[in-house]
Image (spheres, rainbow, N blue to C red):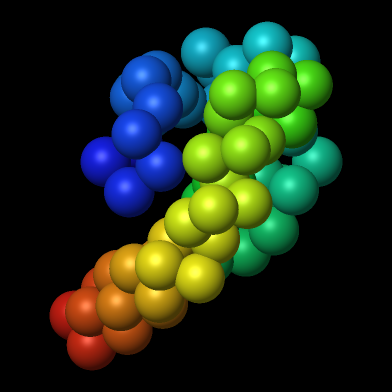
Amino acid sequence: STILGIKNRGAKSEADSHRGRLGLMREQGIVSLLEICFISNISDLNKYNANKNALATKIAEIIIRYDSLI
């Protein structure tokens, strides 16, 4: 949300998701589903398009940092 300049809607557990159960979350190990923005919101989409490289870099940094902890 900081990189894109959009509202941080916070982390939700699977139970708190709109669907309640996500097939993706049935996999073994640690699973995370990133919802970056709402592409139906033109403002979110424009901010994503303008900052997607910086966002991808930050996500990669976080994955690398987390992976080194396990």
